[in-house]
Length: 359
Image 1 (spheres, rainbow, N blue to C red):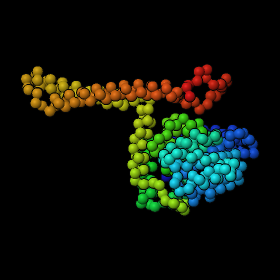
Image 2: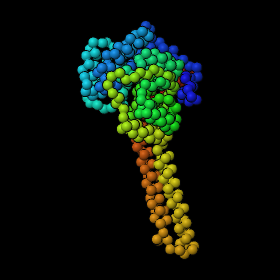
Image 3: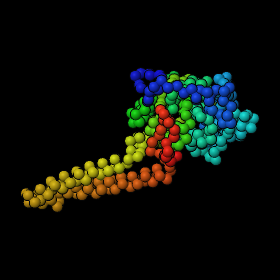
Image 4: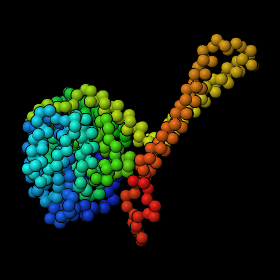
């Protein structure tokens, strides 16, 4: 746990529970299962110069720590020779798996592909440009062992341009934390560690990979962050720009809605519909008072048009809320998405429930 500047970086308390079983899984000397205990997922897009050094750095770090691991590199339609190099390295190494996408789908899609192809009980993600330090991976895994479900890296001393990268990042992190309720210093840091069950059911799209801590929090995950090292880019150029920032902001509204109204859309649409219809009713009563008590002509009053418009808008919002409720019900039933998540069952007769929620 690393509280900094008064920010509550721990979303849930650890409550003193250590994850000894996971620690044993991550020890290569004690665990010899077919599937590795740790999967390192690296989205790649035009990083041909960084690839050999990156893979070697990851491998040497994890071998020195005794972890049973695999490296899953996802090529997101690179055009600089990264694809051919990845295929070559995957044929030469037993610890590397290359997932080659048909075209450039974006970092979120590449990360989702990596999650789907990872076999480990723990997944660590990092960028392919050597700015994240693979030497920090054991630290993130050790923090995960303390009972957390997601550990996010915090680039406390970022090696990026202050005006074009650092300032927008600080503003974005503050905005995301305020909207989602998950206070992290660095949502944009790709260096994160996850328990596989946290991400295996997530449907990612757009720029949602940045909001994985918020999405995990919605599902009840325990989250923390730790400071990690950050290096200046050595090869190539950054893929981030203003257009990507705009897409992130748009996805933020999606996350905010999902956090509050994912399973109850009627609460927002129906509420505003009732507010508009109630306002329309009050305006109508006032106009009726003027018409029938005072005998005034109301046919040319703008309030009459306003009352009609408010009432129709309220009815539309209320009906939209009903349709949204039906769609969400259909989604949960067709996708087999459970409406709750069980962390563990303790006490006598601690066995799975007789009837499991759909998975």
